[in-house]
Image (cartoon, rainbow, N blue to C red; front, side):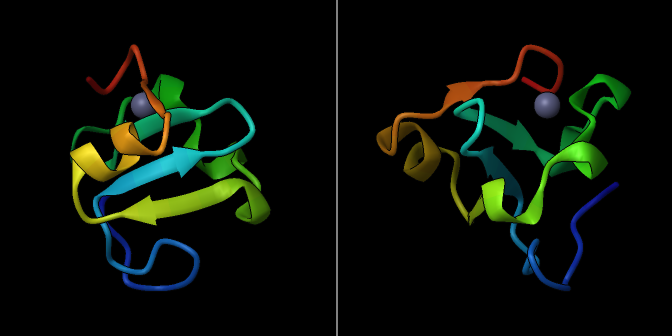
Length: 64
Ligand SMILES: [Zn+2]
């Protein structure tokens, strides 16, 4: 997956998984990120990486 305009991705680059509190970079997605497995209610999107960090997300080991 790369950046997608539709809900719940909304064209933003950084995807926070609120279930694991991990943030993924969709521009550098790795198959191990399993973005498609993340439930919509657990997705919080950000334009900037620091915004996710400020909200307590930890970097994914695969895409960062
Ligand atoms: Zn990732």
